Image (tube, rainbow, N blue to C red):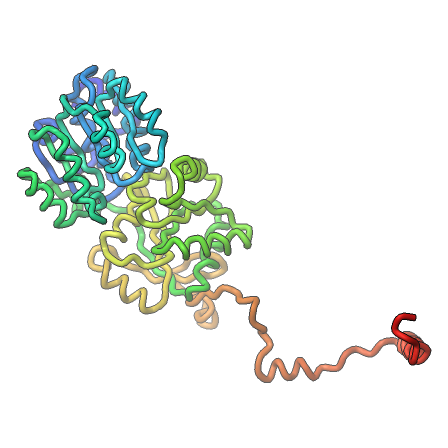
Length: 426
């Protein structure tokens, strides 16, 4: 680490590099092609960027491209790199879709050395000749496996075909896929694999909990948890429709929430994240792709409203809390079948603890034997159905109405007799 970077590092309060930072610094500095794997929240952004920044020449234009899967991740990386880029006399810019392309073109005229881009916008600007790759040295694929989904591998190949043939490739993520290694082989790149996941996971302070509840009771759990002073969490959904439905329910209960939806415009998403980071609300509702790679300081909880379909998704969701060695909690909601499914998915690596909701608090045991059914399953009140059913409903129907005072009863009868036979229009 050169002196300038070391000084910024110290001012930022960093002391020791994380395992992934220590393991990848020298190989990246020496222009090796690597596959770097580490749990989320262990400093991968600085791991892949600092050794590359050390090699860049100010004023030579684009020398490194960092490819990302979302605009939120792009802006997050820019923020993390800003003090180092400035100290080294470099410039950086973000190129993402759903943003002002004219402003991005103006930034490109300043010849930034670091380009942080989503694949679609980068491809668009390459086709128009607006991105110059003459001095390009390195391409970094952040959250590499996410970049490969939904025909992503073909799109990445189109980008690489526009770039110089001799480039350093660096793939980073918490999980990987066969597509990553196949893509590297397709481009005749031999990767050095650096995997520190087992070491970092052994040091993790994240608890993995399961609360058994009905589908209707899940929103009640969110309401109860949001009342706690120190609660601050992201709630993950599989489907956007379910997300919106729960958001409306919580709003009806006057529980403030924010929604991070991948199909909303960039400014709306940016404002939602800014408000959440300022702790203006305690619940951020999102889907997997919208929150991939997000770094939220001091996030206490990740809540899986729906159990993820695969282990990789669970790992990425869980990585939003307990970052950089801090404590965190992952709370999973579902029925007994969901619990069995989740245990098969993660229990070998992440022990799962059963918990109960007792008077708004998560506890390892029901409050008492009598309380067990109520604390095991949390139900959302259903106001559309009568609670008086069966013999209770019949008993209620037979209850006599209270008698009116005699004077009022006689007065009412007299008026009725007087009005009898009078035309309705009288």
